[in-house]
Image 1 (cartoon, helix red, strand yellow):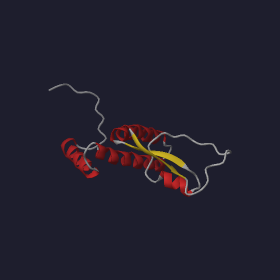
Image 2: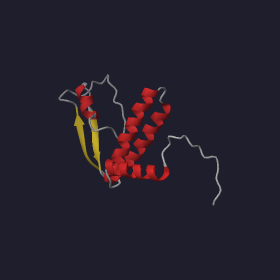
Image 3: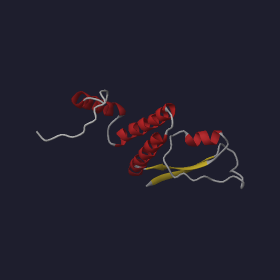
Image 4: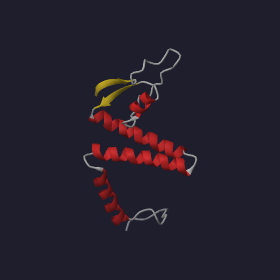
Length: 128
């Protein structure tokens, strides 16, 4: 499951008793512990094995999509979509491909089935 636990605090003493520890238990971007430490905080992390990472990415994708749906303006929506793309790029790797390989599959589907530019909304169909 988890391989190692590391503590990051940038050489600063642990937070005083007046600071409350916030528990996340979620996948975060690689530099988040470094950013927390640079601000004088500390964090505890674990590095996930492949299966736990795959599951955490699936959970993260759901989280990012929920944040996209909750976005109240275009800029916020675009920032959340950027997060969604980053998670999808990571998922392409755990599924044995690359972001470029995934892009090739996207283009193949685009060429075969089209995109969404024409705003086609299918009401119904019958088997032919």
